[in-house]
Image 1 (spheres, rainbow, N blue to C red):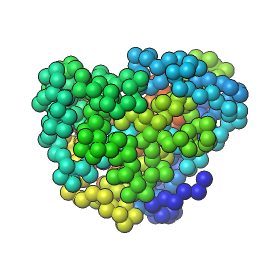
Image 2: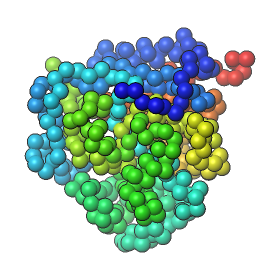
Image 3: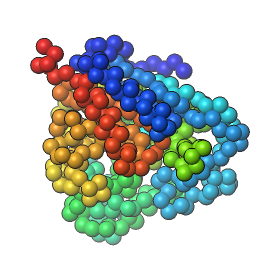
Length: 423
């Protein structure tokens, strides 16, 4: 599928990279595929407004027998409230696919928590327009959120994972009814006082932030993200918070299926429910439900690296970005992750810690980005102007997931030449 894209293409040699060293990245990916670690992945690298590398590896979808159905639980449904695949209420379609589908540069992948960056960018835009401040109380925009002692919680505390309700969630049965979603968010209960701990809120925080976006804009949050961020940047064919009907799996092979490791050695990759659940794909869960391409994600980060501008379109001011892209939690340990995450208002930073997550141990302290659970990482290096994305289609557990992300990111960092070294 031919899609207009806001970054012009340029050769990889344009970037400050040792190209021989960069080949280690492809060698590592090929090793993973040969070992059967995941069916496929997609990688992109951009530099100073140009797309220099954009490639799919392996299979976006494995061959499936006619009429096969998913196994496993829907991510975002920790209580198992979605009906099993095949039931009427599950909204899970049978697959008609029989042949494997190779990964391409325009293949759409489940982005999981990379979704949070699109929501954050929308909030940055609203802040710049004077429609919110991160020092605002959530209840300033959602008065009913004050219930159960939550009246003083700020947007800043929520977006930096200090809200105090990390395990709250909105049941999937409510996702299609915005009024019920908002009521569920208002009914969240505190697990500890806001601000007293840093603890990753995998889904809960961004349900709150999505409802704030809706209260301010009067739009469905999915529409607001698209209209205020993705469409102006020319990324609305590469990044989706909620897939439209025309891109659902019954109508298009553009979407990669999602897998997880199986104990069946003959079939080591088990299809996950997200692959065929129209409920999941359309809901665009604000903390985890987006789909997109690696090139779309590196372009979004190029906007940040270029002071708020992409392809001649200014979305944000440099000072807005400077405010959002700071290490606000410093060396405080994220109690869920077990290490300091150095959180900004959306992305997190590499920081100075020995232990890090996803961005690569070799990254300078000011490199920032975010990941998707068990699958992916995207980051930007303000020292060079490089942004990088790696997205795979098997949700694999730690410790191997974190190890492979460190290997992948370090393969790129090891290839980067500093200005002094390239002079």
